[in-house]
Amino acid sequence: MTSILSIQSWVAYGHVGNASAIFPLQRLGAEVWGIHTVQFSNHTGYGAWRGQVFGAELIAECVQGIEERGVMARCEAVLSGYMGSAGIGAAILDAARRVKAANPAALWCCDPVIGDVGRGVFVREGIPEFLRDQALPAADIITPNQFELEWLTGREVRTLDDAKAAITALQAQGPRCVLVTSLRLADTPEGEIGMLAGEGGRFWRLSTPMLPLSVNGAGDAIAALFLFHRLRGGADGALSAAASSVFGVLRRTAAAGSREILTVAAQEEFVAPSQVFAAVGC
Image 1 (cartoon, rainbow, N blue to C red):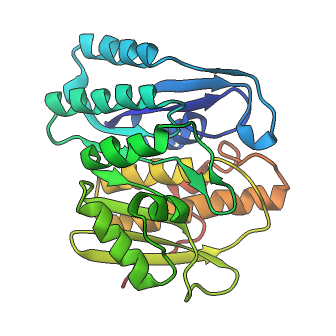
Image 2 (image 1 turned 90 degrees about the vertical axis):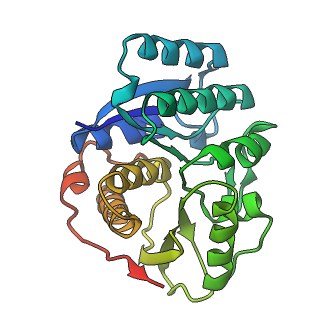
């Protein structure tokens, strides 16, 4: 059984962060050790929420407690997302180091939550710099969106060649595998949204139809699913599986007119996507 340590945000209502990542991983058969960086009533996309950001000390204590159970060697991967503060980032970095000390084959998949096109940077001061300067060199897999790819590399990404060059620049800093989500390039077909993965000097891309909805949490699910499938195979298969599953869930969400992603109601999409999108080498 795959064991994954997932350290990211939690909401009581809705599905973002761990509330978007843990259940799909469990549905696929993974054992997930969830540590929450924040506890909010709902995601911040509503414009109003209640709750608090946890201190880095709590994250470190929970990681230490797991370590004291003598199970770290069973952990195959660390998954991290929204951090809440740069101090929490340091605690996550330490957690990844502890896991790798116990299991050198373990991977750290870092979703570098910084911002998005149209919104700019929306995380607290110090987090983007921490991700660029400390997390990036230590991560094995990184899953930025197009805005984050540009911010982390200082490069404008408009064409496929631009995107490949930016991925290569990221890989030169540490991570062997990069998945870029929500990618709109000059040759992306109208009405579609793309993804691009790169590993070992090779690249794969796919695109799915854009759906008439505005929800949060899809990127968190994609990162989790990509990590799970990458643990079992190549980046191309992981890209296809993650994109197909999330598209199926989002299609069901759009059909229902839901403001929240239907993580539970559409759970079969995680196991057997109703439509499969193949990743093509490029």
